[in-house]
Image (tube, rainbow, N blue to C red):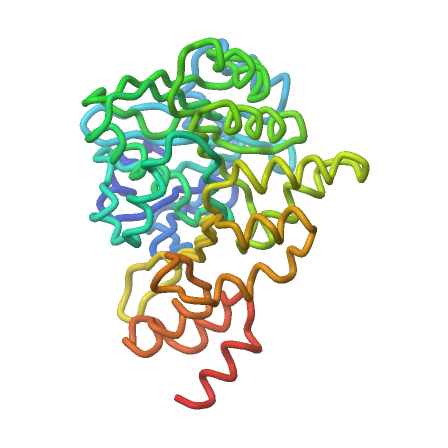
Length: 354
């Protein structure tokens, strides 16, 4: 079968899809508005998938994939776009998932993000976490926030990613993009040395272990604005996840560090809209004296109640409140709201009165 990656990537862009999947015994499939859609092409054999996928690799990458059976990398396709790839094996055959990275970095206004985003990125130091499941748009939200800093402030911004996704052009700020495996051995190692590289802002692609989280907290405490991501679904859940990574005797110290260094937790999900397309829903926790006290005293279960208070004044918002607004505006339907809700019982009470 004559099928090359360039034509497949053109198809992804033409369909405004987010992802492309190549797996043996299946036609190529793309994800559109969160749903997988088979392309009108013949099913691929394992050999065809391997030939197509290997056409993108260097000899070094082929060796790494064959040794580790996994490979993450990002690459540019001229005149089409930038993609992130994951190669893996299934039933001893090569398979791949590709995600398109928008060539134009969106602004905070382009994405329709709440105004509080522009306020929190003006902080000189602290920790800003953007969380959510895979495919929820975390990377795009972070790129928009860094773009805002880039357009308005003279900062040195270091990104540590696996792989590097959005490549920022230097406007007022100076970017140093560092990729795991290519430019550094690990997140923790890169963070340790980043503090000697005169950064103002540090982006950590994923806070995946105790060492990385500890280094991020230290960087945030020592005068740097640190952005990080976790795969958690709610703001209070994010705080618990960070604390639970550490052994019990270390947790009081971590709570104390978090209570002083945390700026905000933004948990987001992408929901399908009525009529097509998707919309981001954000739950926002902003650190203030009351929130800091609850974290320090290990009363994480009370954070949700704190988020519900005076949302107009604090800039905080619960996911339920946002879902209610979207339901009233008929942007999403009831089944979608309940499916994605962190608190379906609370939302159901509201829906019954609609």
